[in-house]
Length: 332
Image (cartoon, rainbow, N blue to C red; front, top):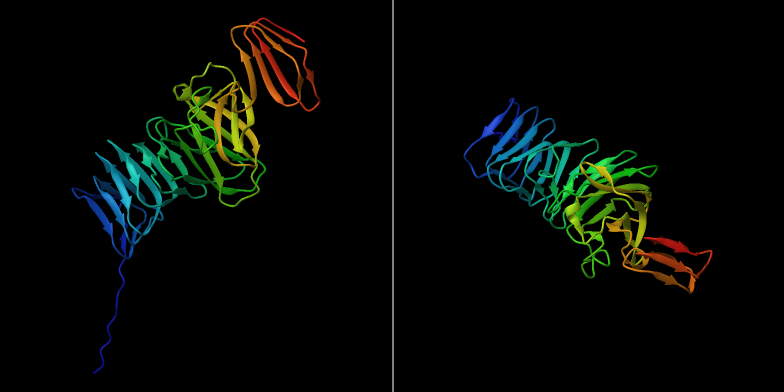
C-alpha cells in the first residue's frame, strides 16, 4: 500500500482590523513569511527580530513602547506603513528597512545607526519635527526617490536639520542623505571649523551616477552656528579639494528653520553652510575695526571688508570677481 505525504507550508497572515501583542519582549520571525494585510499589528513594548521575511502589503505595523525599541535579524523587512510611537528613548535599526507607502513619526526618533531606511516611490512621511525625526547618527542614510518636485528628507542628528531636494530638469533617481554634527575644513576630513559656519555637514549622493540637476535646500537652527556674526550666508559643496560656493544670500525660513537653497547641482557629496566671510569659501581680507588699503593686481575671487574706510588702488583683471564692503566709505 502506497502512502502519500503532503507538506503544507504555512505563513502568518493577519486579516483582523487590529491585533495587540502584550507583555512580551520580542516578536521573532525565524522562517517563512509574516504578512500583514488590511490590518494593524501593534507591537507594544516589543522588539522585532526578523530572520525570515516580512511583507506588509496593505497593513500598518505599529511600535508602541514606553522605552527604546529595535528591529534586528537577517531577513528582508518591508513595511507598507510603519508607525513609531516610542514615548522614551528611540526606535533603533540593526538592519535595513523598506517602507512602501507611509512613515508616521508620532513620538521618538527613527535611529538609523549603520543601516539604511528606503522610502519607495510616492511614500509619505508625517509627524516629523524638532522632536521626532530620522536620526542619522552613524553611516546609515535615508533614501528616497527624487524627480521634478520638492522632496523632504526629515533628518537630523542632535537637532533637526532636514534637507529638501528637487531634481529640476534632471533624471529621476534615488538619493541618499545624512547629516553629521561637524563642519570640517576638507569636507569629510581635516580640522573642525571653529568660526563662521554652521556645525553641520550634509552628505548627498545618488544611486545612479549622472543626470543630476538638483536644487538643494539645507536647514539649520541659529543654535547650530559656530562663532557667527549674522551676516549673509553661502551654501558650499566640497569638490576638487575645496569648498565651492553654490548659493549665497540672506537665510530664508523653511520648516520653521533657517534655510538656503542652491540650484542646478550636478556635483554631489558634502554640503555645508558658511557665513560669506569664511576664509574656506573665499579669499576674505578683513579689518573689522579700522581702515583697509589695497594695492597689487587682483585676478581671483576675493572679498575685502573694512570697519571704516576702504581704499583700493589695485588693478582688477577681467578674470577677477571682487567684493568691497566698508562701514564708512569706499574709495577706488
